[in-house]
Image 1 (cartoon, one colour):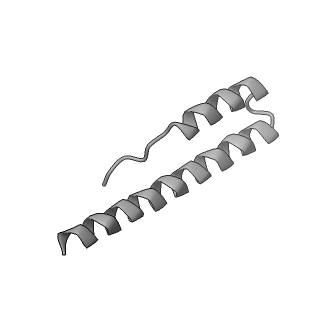
Image 2 (cartoon, rainbow, N blue to C red; image 1 turned 135 degrees about the vertical axis):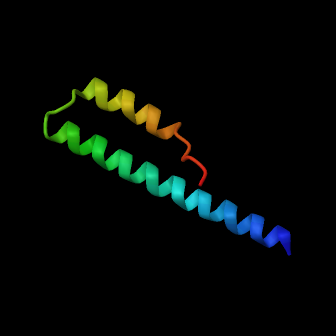
Length: 57
């Protein structure tokens, strides 16, 4: 039984991380499209977003 709870938690964490990355990528792209950041800054941030892990709750 404890194993099922661990799998659920892991799946929830994966979903949370994916959601977080999607939002960060969206905002990063929006800032670039509006001219608030350069292409270099956008690319640098994209690398950071791809390596980001959501904090555990």
